[in-house]
Image 1 (cartoon, rainbow, N blue to C red):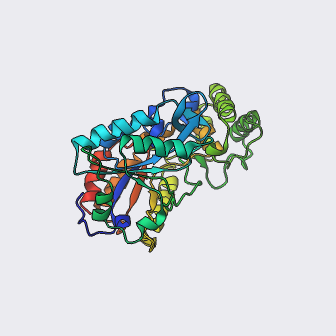
Image 2: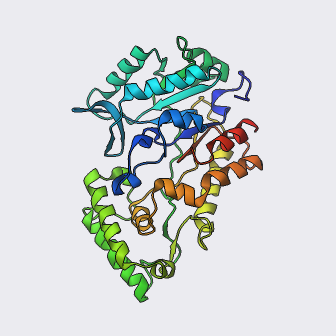
Image 3: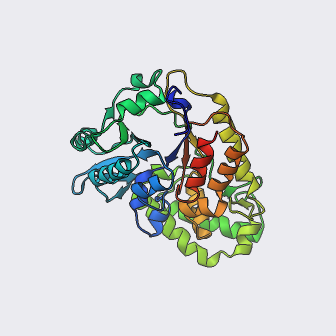
Length: 345
């Protein structure tokens, strides 16, 4: 870290890997809109991640694994901890923080605590510990027995600053849901059929609120719809997307940057709580359908928009005076450059 140990921890800029364990998922239509990382946790550390958005699940059959929404990530929690400890042992000066929350399944947090204790990982279980906590103080708490600096928080203290509207794809202005031309009508009818296929979900519903069955029905419908929707239809239907080179990319990108401006200007919390600056494309039911029509995914949305690179450039230009946990999708797309920019702030 380039920051002095006397710096308050919630003033230290670090890269947070959004839904880090989803990097263990494979391919497929459902996983395209569940998988936010292109690699596992150890590889994410190589790419610059230092904070993990960590969501465990105690599964009746699989034991303690991970999840994203209703999708189970079949990779053992204990193996992930071993992977991380092998990295911190090789990088003893680098602090790594596991932000453990959304622990699902009866007895989940008890199983997490037991697994961390068995592995010798220090646990922070009270948000009060963050009040006035410096970087040096956290490093002292995070000392492991010969495996570097790793601490796991089970207290769910961070300010998420979540904004579900910041999707890569959607309707702009007088969009397809209002236009009367044939292309818009064709798209509208097809998209509405997909909403109905997923139990009549709302276009603005978040994907994390869907069951895996609903998500599967949604993306399978959108994939089938793609055969009848050509590029001209998409371009003429009042839609936007975030992809580099798109005539409409400025709309979602400007909203993203304005959001990040607002989180930065709020400054650090007085109680020491960390703040997430979510520099990532969120997913609504509409954005999943439209993204599937474009053959995209959560990882591709980041790659095709070059969002991580754009955020890195903004950091280098000094756009933000305060950053704490800069949360990204696919940290292995430009994460090392982003880490260098943050450490040079």
